[in-house]
Image (cartoon, rainbow, N blue to C red):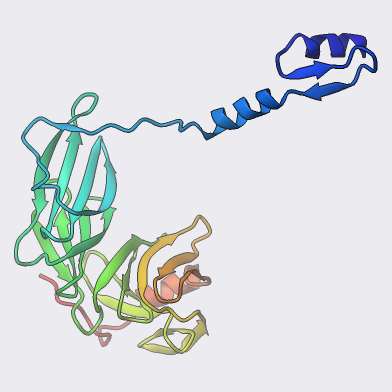
Length: 259
């Protein structure tokens, strides 16, 4: 015990009463601990764009997606384009206006699958599929019948494309390569519904102002709902039986425009 007290006393973190031997923590040490714990462990620095990127090019950046190989995609909602940033060394980076044109109107959510980048176009109710290397337009997914102000995009563990629409009380599901519309879930009736499989309903929460979507490791879906003031969990959407049902939907299901 004496050895322990001696060791503690040699530090600046405790005070030992010489009469009672009681060890008391130093308040100054505790304060230093909290100050150190509150100190950020990250650095903030601005990139130096070697090819002249400016605030005009990057004005009002909205969403961001990491693509690996030192690349970032940044969507600018007001400029109607997606910028690709590629790091060179340190803070230095190149940029390229990667996706733009009349097809893109209010880019928001983005997702990457294999060689394709998917970008939600908020104003004209479509998701654009572009080549992830060149930015070439490969197709348009969805229309005003299946999307209404699309925002969040995620590729599910089943390989399908899930899209939130701010003005729809459910998520829309598409086959990403063909753009085929497969169904919806999280409907206003509080049930998951497929248009060609009316008996497949399972409980689901009501979505109001769906913004973004992501999947957890269990395959469950998490959705931010602006007007619901909540992050909502949609369970039971991804299972072998569910994926088989989605994959076997007939051609009679509504389809989005694709080319």
